[in-house]
Length: 130
Ligand code: 5GP
Image (cartoon, rainbow, N blue to C red; front, side, top):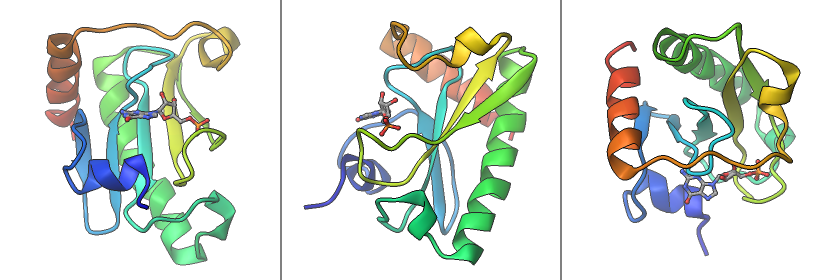
């Protein structure tokens, strides 16, 4: 059984796509902690981030950097926070979250809600800054 993220990569489950290349995919988190909360994943289905081989793992951070630079141009913030949890979806992913305070990246807090139109516009705005 493939993960929900593999289904997203394959287009079998819809997502608000931000970027894609041969090895990686980035899309908006559906339950965001902050506007612009983005997930970066390897296309190869690997559960635990530290099981990713060195070259693919290194490239994932470089890909995440490009995405983070685009998000921060659309969602002004002090920093792009970067976190790895992986407790819910068994497909390695980096959370990129625009933050101004430490509380902005508290995963126990209530998630934000956006309409489909708002997600679509945000994704398009971010893609325009890649
Ligand atoms: P974690 O595995 O890092 O604990 O959390 C998984 C993250 O993936 C959560 O922030 C959750 O909102 C996000 N997520 C889970 N399923 C989907 C989905 O189908 N689409 C999108 N865009 N995000 C998802």
